Image 1 (spheres, rainbow, N blue to C red):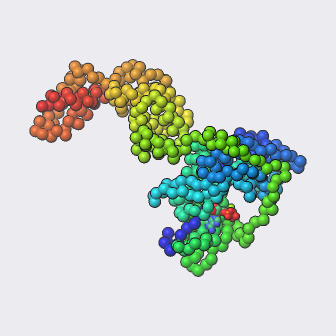
Image 2: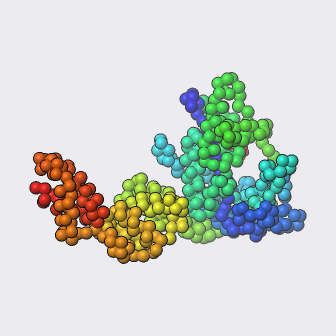
Image 3: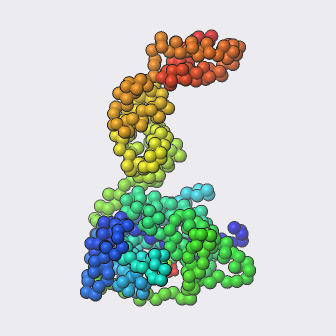
Length: 478
Ligand code: ADP
Ligand code: MG
């Protein structure tokens, strides 16, 4: 980027709340149903129908607000945002206007430059619109109203981001957080998380914000980054060529990573907001908000610190374990049965994760009893089974057969042998196989010990206890 300029970015992220039913009626929110099957007269906006607020959606919005350190609005009301759209049957969207349920707040991001907080402006509740489908019928636009009325929270930042990379990190954090709180599945392909990026540039040192464009409906983190990169470049070129930036709404073309204008925004839209007369103001009691706060899971940030300070894990391991709540939950279960925290972390981030990747499943669906895994780890730490044998031969069996690791190791004859007669046989065999190395060792190349240990490991098929083997070799090679 031309370093005369500074980019300024504000993001509006819409997260679909994982409630079973819609924001103002009992229609299902299930994704992927036959078009227009979850459409009661309320969803269809028939005259005379009355909305009723979904309490779960309010609870979910408060959860997000508390996790982001927002101030929770005590007296809330819903407002009608009036505009015409083919997939908005009522002619208005029910949203929040002057009383967003959460105000202010912040989200921590990590970038190459270090950690910092991104300031939020607000989080408000609103209903989603239906979906216009342009690519089924060549002559007509089809409309699916299943999504109409689905609860969303819109998380709005201050103009506080300054690069595409920061935007990437921010959305990654938001996705992680909504999943952690279990309030949104974070699935961008299915549209559960969508983002509008507001972008402007200004000369470095300038306080006043430049004219912004808004790139609408970005549906992957990659596209958010690409759209912002493209916009920043485009604006700099415009300004360098002596042109002014027009305030526009733009759309992203994923085929060539560019954006194009969909409309010029000459002046602010007038939505004629007014409080929805069918939905009386709702007042949130202090105790209710407090209870939700108590029900929040420990947040990743706090756990990452705890894992380093209390369990002595590295920052890398702690962060990896807290990348997804399911991984953390599993880790917490295993350490009920084992205090070898470092070993448990190594096992989860090593062999277990590899197994899950190969099976293309996530920790959420990992059914191995944590007790069995703790037993396996204990066998390895006690030197009874070799690590790689445990990982490749025993782990898959205990996962599929739910058997005791010790029984499996015995059954498959995988226990390490510490019987010195047997070990001696293997050690002699290894020594006999490498006379020149023995000579070199005796002349002082002590580093060759590893080679002999490796040879014994091979001959014994990994069953020889390496510590005892090393001792034996040192005696015999004197
Ligand atoms: P609008 O009324 O056009 O929706 P808002 O003031 O509500 O605009 O802001 C929408 C988003 O745009 C917010 O995230 C805000 O931080 C961001 N934003 C506002 N002005 C600018 C600007 N000049 N450059 C970049 N982002 C901006
Ligand atoms: Mg906007």
